[in-house]
Image (cartoon, rainbow over all chains, first blue to last red):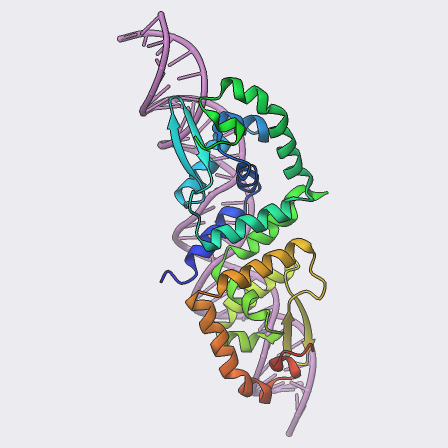
Length: 126
Length: 126
DNA sequence: CCTTCATATTCCTGTACAGGAATATGAAGC
DNA sequence: GCTTCATATTCCTGTACAGGAATATGAAGG
């Protein structure tokens, strides 16, 4: 049913650079909002709103860990989402912004490990 | 350069069902606007506007053949566009709307062959 | 030149965000 | 209870379309 609507919904999520960066960096493992802030260097509202947008469309899932909200890619993405996330990873490879995000995530990993409410900074599922 | 902008532009093109259908059906070969109208069963303005949108972002190319405007996918799409068009084809496979479009294109092919200003109905480059 | 055909553009209204500022929520600790 | 921290929501303004109706363009043929 829905007739292509689902696919369009996915693309609607992908047509914003901030959301692309969130999804791209999430492929390395779950993260809290404050970690996203440091990795993307964007204000809290912006991050939170876009994560909310993605969550409402099922592109990310989240779980509360005390004060922290830990976001992750869906445990069981359907075919279309899987294909598009893979495509994004592929396209992001030779792009400066995405590479910089990954580099920053790597660099900040030890710092995150200290403050993190769970193992999310290490890439382990919370 | 442009830092991910290009990729976002692609996704902006993909986040509308009509445009998805246009691109999907175009993968089978070039088509005129009037043929799109019959295949998608959508009014001329709608088709023409979305093709204009796609053209402005480099997702399609077009060439005039007398009264007809023949649209085609770019002759030399870059990496990101190629990857996403392939992904679209993949995702469209098990979707009713896209399949119906293809079926209608196939069914209408002989009719197009008569009225077509060129070989575009057959899938040959104009 | 006047038509006709195929296509494009303009003008309109409505809707969906993006982004930032300020404020609200909710959990944990004192 | 009050604070603090992390995160979400609300309220605002501006912009980008989507869609349809009407009109314009541009090519080809009488």
